Length: 348
Image (tube, rainbow, N blue to C red; front, side, top):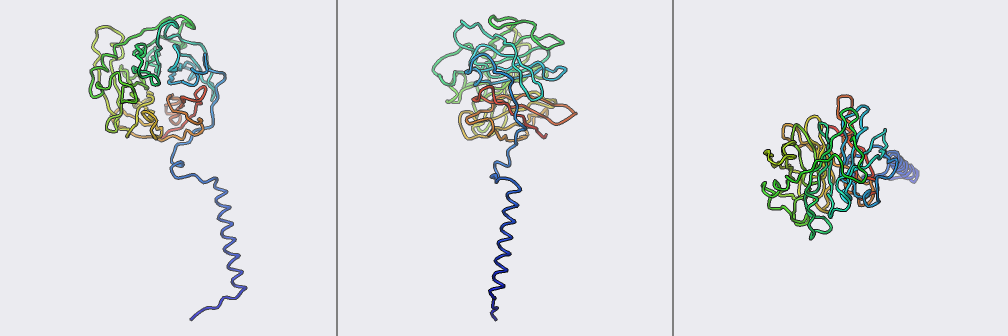
């Protein structure tokens, strides 16, 4: 049996459909702009940070910031250092709320020496700041040798202020240096065969540094082998001697295809790992926890869109790691001037 629909019934039905659609669109507008599922899964940064003034001394240095570390102080974050992979100096800074305040320069090498340290990472431990060179060939001129990059530096700080007790704007003062890691990289499997090769050919390149429990950990951006990235560790104090055994070890972290380590940072129960592409592959930056139990746990993939076009996450700095609140970190970038710092709050 068929049912007849009157014009009045049709109009009422049509109005109901229009009202329903209107309410649906209003609901979408109320919930905010549509985001693809992949974007919603990325960890969003906290409100934007600022830098009180430019980092020293040139724009080229400021767009190549590559590593930072802070000493434990009271008040917190009042003694930090940042490095760049273009010049022969590091720079101290402090953190005031959500503002970075650049301070004095720490000279790593004399200006008149050929090459540069290609400084890629910094760390603090037990009265010393540490800075490491890349221990690899220059990225943009792989045909050139750069012996200066095969250097690890450290300098002491005052036990109360955690500041260096020297000024070294132009002259090198107070530094210890060593190139002993070069011998380790030449011989320690499974990455030894990649020693002194360009990064684009799978060569060794250090970009992460952390010091914990008497050992120094070097995170390798490359090579990536069978979805594994590598960390090389040595005895902290032996590496600054001529003859003490280094007790070198190679550790592998299954971070994924074409994925390397961009920085390391010490926390209470292990090391945080900032990962990203070895070269320019479509790999999202992420933070993982490499725990004391040896397990690797991915904590988050990061939304870095507000850092600017072409920004590459290269610096991981721990802001808070205690029982009083969440695990807070600051990520800074190669590309934007002054690092475009972004804060992320992690769950672990």
